[in-house]
Length: 268
Image 1 (cartoon, rainbow, N blue to C red):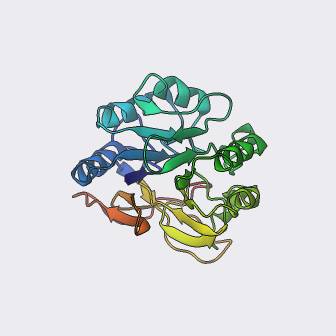
Image 2: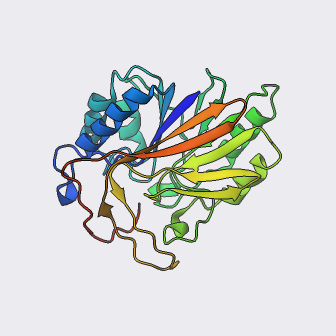
Image 3: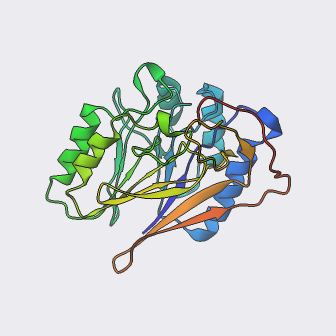
């Protein structure tokens, strides 16, 4: 099974966006590369829109619509639930229902469980919440023995980076839910705008780089969070019964791409 992960598109309503970057062209380049890799499903792991505006989601749906494989999406801190639901619910993109937009994709050999980690009162910090923790625990306790991959926007673990304060504040609670289940392949996230991996909860925690911008590596916990223009990236998680889950990170070159510092945003 080939599971593509696209994160942090930060779609703007028109091109170019902030800093002269065209997030629509970047997403289109990612999709063209993915088309040749033939994924079975695409996961959009949050921050689909730059500011959570209806026209931003509309542009994203125009670009990604009709790709021809199942797509599931969960929101991130730049998304706004109402606009997210209004734009994506009528589309081919699967989203959750109710006040928390958790979503499950269970048609393949790997069960995919997506969590809505938008914090209380639209806080930029992550939060899973008791209801979603119970939902995950219930699915892991059932008779279905297929492997499970959890996906979300905010990491539920620390990475030793300046973005750590905005991680899921109840990530340790999720770890306690997952740690006893050997069939959990891992938890994969976005938000950090760079790739990272960590041994966590008896499995692997990983972060997918972004389509829109990259945050340079800074190991000072109180370091400044800068965004630089980069080649858009995605990950392809390949599940093989003999190998387990193998993750590949791919960067897609854009002719106009440059590495240029653009500012110091408060959130990813």
